[in-house]
Length: 185
Image (tube, rainbow, N blue to C red; front, top):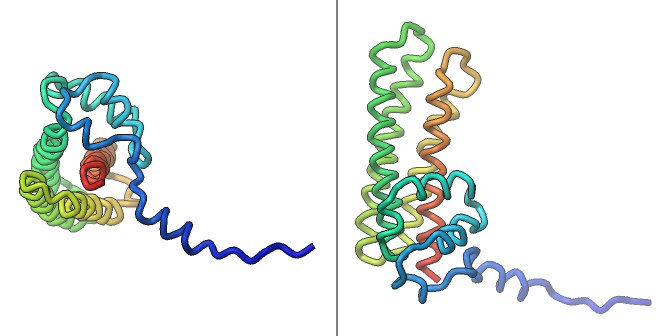
């Protein structure tokens, strides 16, 4: 028995234009963030939900903003953490006694400068309701720190705190990206 030839092209096209975060809608943007809505946000595909929930729940401001303000809060918190990480990296450049780490740490400073610029762009785009550009800026910041991680990979004397802080920053960028994508659709 022969099977009919069915083109999967229309299905692929549909999947490409359907938002990943379709369980949230723009009608939610005027409501104050609640524990339930935060759980829904943090359960979106591609978000590490446990980190998202803890990170945002621990900030009392989270439950005082409207859903639409949550994106700005996430981006601002990401920016602040980025500034702290760049200060940490600059300190490591100054204080490391391992000559094999001086250049990678210096590179990471450069990557964090780029990441913070991208986050500043994301803040500007979000305030102008340009959510596609906000998402792209968050991705640029994520990629910058991924490059920093690659420069440090396999080196024995990198403090575990550096790896953890890079990972957290990337998770923050990703939450900003996903929220931006929710607003886009």
